[in-house]
Image (cartoon, rainbow, N blue to C red; front, side, top):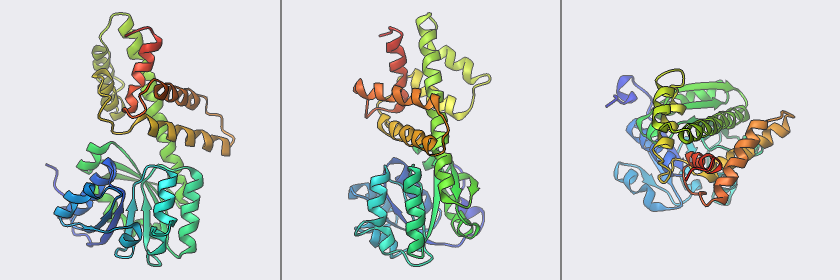
Length: 306
């Protein structure tokens, strides 16, 4: 078991909040607890916080109740709408976070929503940080996420000890938080397009009589051995679709936001349109709630495989 960073070097213990305890948020919040920080959490389904409370976290009824108790609060929510409500709603983070307090949002959001968070927090005298993460829930649980940030140098200095609880490496994109949101959308597109590539390769070789597991072995044992090939490729050849780290609907949301960003900046994104359409076909086939690696089944279906 990897030693906790809190025993590797002294850090200042902070009182930190976490809003949104889905698979990723829960794992990230637990890492903050294990890092020795005082944690206040909230979630729409309270039962998801029970084990964190048993480990020492405090449950609060609303995002505002979290924010008024802490110096920094993270949010990890599904989409723009849920983030808007949790931050600027009647009982939102922005209504209670102290001036100078930090809100670090790790959700994958549209550029429009990222600007709304940046500017809205500034109006309240608060600090907004985009702290997007790359990795699936097991990586979050192990403290091995990659964190993509954009904020002022001072904000990152204050936040770094917290980010290091769940992130093995921190990438600084720039000073404007929106830059990190665009980087995350871009990197998610690369994940989905790689899955589409693998789906087509596996389907073609399977139809020609070669076991996709053999193709996966060749891929990951040679040039194509990045985590995106190893992790997602294994899920695909094993047909592990029903314990989603992220469902098809989440992938579609990301691709639509990425395409919209391309429109804002007048950048054509033809491959993104292909991936978006493949995700739509998966939803039409009844796979909306399955892991997005189920795109393999759409490639198999197109090729006539059962």
